[in-house]
Length: 241
Image 1 (cartoon, rainbow, N blue to C red):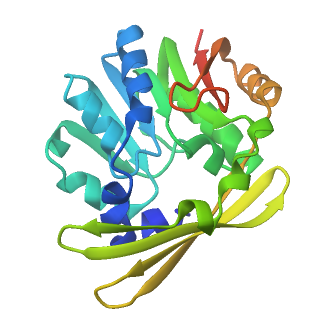
Image 2: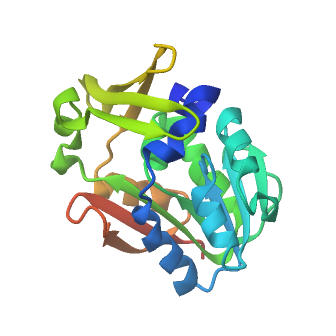
């Protein structure tokens, strides 16, 4: 099930204007170039920002996401016809042979159920050609990112063309280790509607992720620092032998 912020049509429509700076994707674009990837699978593609960045570079991309509303937004964006969009997840993919599979931003951590996580790793493995790479990021639990998920730190008002002012903030709901739940609130000035979206992330230690990857046949080639969050995230580069 997709969180409301991705699955609710009104919230999916404002996702990109609320988060316009996607500099975090630059590192993934560079890795696609580093690996010489001509075919990429983006797991949890959301509204399609990363697949479209790759398609602009002539790369063949498959974007998969469980949220219909997010995919509806993705399909309206310029250049969307160059991407193959699939509603679903990595546990049940059509036959693919890609050079690179990615999970950007919160995607890996949003897969909180251990069985689904294992099935996702198997699905990505099956979609990769031999020698292909799986790349994803996850926050270092030692950074205790959730301590900054407060209304005081996150509150803002954004003016969105065609929508009007939208007030947003995030609040921590519960820490039940290794799960952390938080709630985004959205207030639309035009009609006063208030929508909320609860999300839960699973925080995994580096050793745990490396063991999971090895158990599913991957070779962990490198664990990098996230350029946009130095010292706070792990970026895993794993290869299918």
